[in-house]
Length: 435
Ligand code: FCB
Image (cartoon, rainbow, N blue to C red; front, side, top):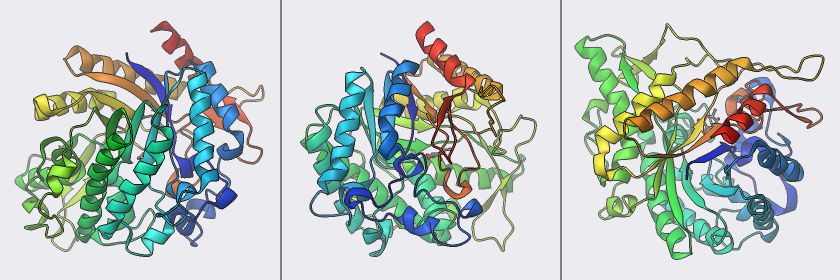
């Protein structure tokens, strides 16, 4: 069965930052630091999903969604990232999962969508190998309670983006600027993934996936320098996270100036390569890469991909990049590639309700239509795709962009919390019903 769904993440929608015993996450800390988030916004309230979740489940049911991808806030469940469970926090997800099941919607739960407990960050976060073990303990506790009803488990969301934005460039929490020295945060996330797969399976989980952010990489020119830079970027963004999980080995990192990874210990790769039931793929756009000057900290730089329409975020709209990506994963990994779930795809536009309250987001309809056709085209080329989740159900807190980028099928008035389904919601509803 092909699953049609929508995706969200805890920090981006829940609010209730200190409710019912929740501990602080790195995003609570980071968003309160001056200058980090556009307009000084935070996720303290966000969509107040923690209190309005029944409305959101009703929206999913009315949409006809087969599945809903959401994430669990680790510090809601373990306020310090370890030890006893905060019962009220886990109860919240228990109720949500029950309500989804009652509507016939398959819960797809992501264990980590970037909101690490601050207490673990204080000990080095994902730079500290111990975090991987704590992550598996958390996974076991959650699975004990929810694995009888959660249909799909996703260990990590986009470990590349978390490493790059959070640890290398400092644009996201925890705000570290280590450039290539951020690599241990990649390995420890992947090790945490592998240990969590074991823990989930030991505690009754069915289908287990990891979600990677993947991008087709294009060289800015066919000069040897640009080709080498594009290769290095592809290694860092795509292969560093797909290869160990799917093949049990890291790619050659020499194009990035990395000759050894001493933090990778014997046996780690066997843990990381535990067989999966699916690969979650998040796709937004291809990336154009040029060689960087000798003074730069990294051997590549992003260039502007021209000749395409752009979303409100300025991201190029290249639907065929999704087909290209899916086909290249199949060609690259062959038999080792499990079924694919497109766990995120979507676009932001500055959607405003008209005088009649209607949000005519025709750009989003075009975007979704074209990308769904790209998935169909990839399937026609033999790629086993089992689901497609729109990012996002709701307009929400878009990380460093605060509330300025609206990705929702449903408009949210952040002052009142009012939800208004956009034209794209009604379009998707018809599309799902028609399939
Ligand atoms: C992805 C994130 C998601 C959202 C979209 C726009 O990288 O996983 O939380 O921010 O981008």
